[in-house]
Image (cartoon, rainbow, N blue to C red; front, side):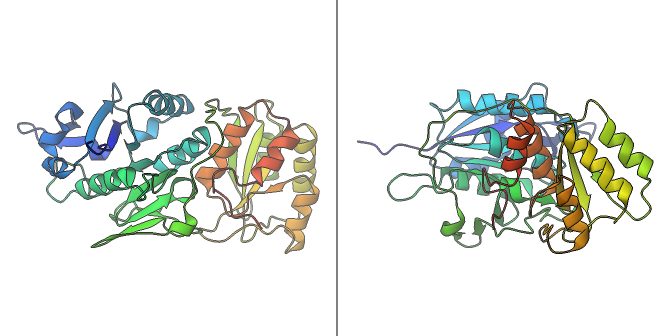
Length: 345
């Protein structure tokens, strides 16, 4: 019997990686992914079956929406019987949001979903897109000797690293290593060989796969700064169409020790709004019991977002609010790791 060839579905949503230069005008235009092998001849070296699916029309990642996240998830779900792994080509600007959203929507999926992109178009001589694409396909197809997928979770492949998707943030608009996972090590690193950090990789779920694609975008993120007007905070917290608030605080979760702030937050939580505390710092975690200012927030009903990124905290809150859960249940789950997105104490 012939060994089964891994089948990898490449989904092009849009973004820089899928651009080529028009030979006459010099302008960049989306690549027709039916001709992917022509533009990336290295794909002929893979002993894999490569399938392709293209968003029509391709979208700029700045135009990403929860509805498009659901569309992307449905493509993945609809190809479960056809693909052993998935590579999602995506613009870099909102890739961390999409990776986080997919990690929640696709919990229980027993195969790899690898997002990648590039800083330079794939039709440019110095592009980083080819290396990112080739590495992403390798990760999506990798298996243990018994055939189990090596990394059965949603990840981001960029540069030499494979990251957990809900742990990354875009940290550079210019460098090829555009993404950083400040609070969680890479799952794999590609050099001469690919080294997998096996103890960190989530195991394939043993529970039935039940995707949930609904999001509630009645969420807002507020970044605190010295001198922020109390009228601004109060106005936002009193908005009737806001159900969830991400509060980006100082250091390990601190905020101004002002009566108006705790009063406004307490009133919002009494109305059923969920307020989540995350740090403005790139690295580190919220520890609301460490200082009196953080303790006051907790007493007002704020819950800790731990070491979640802003991208993850926003998408997770939208996801949980979209499931029809009670505010108390949303608060509980925001402090619970659902897909490896938060370091639990």
